[in-house]
Image (cartoon, rainbow, N blue to C red):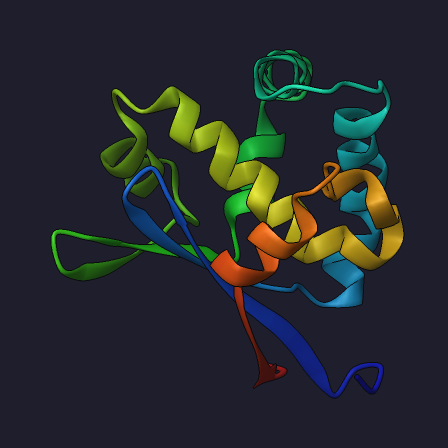
Length: 141
């Protein structure tokens, strides 16, 4: 991928909803990277530990969830819903806190895979994630 020319776009089904996330521009992603790094600062082996760590990070930095999901949209009731506003996130995630955390971690993965490297791959999960995630290049906005 040429720097500045294209941004990665990935799609993943999470808890029965299909999320699409587009990688942000450098100017937006770089400041966000230090805030996201805390999500992966402790080694953990299970989903429950990941979720608890993410919840603690979101409590410490309440804007982090929204900032991560700003470039994400989801199909809800047959319509695309952007997750860039609190009202839309509320519409999608009310009663689905676990799904919100998983979606935010997916957005972090799309955004920072090259920066955080292997923290996103659990042993044996590389093939499964590759199967579940569709990647395309989208022109930069």
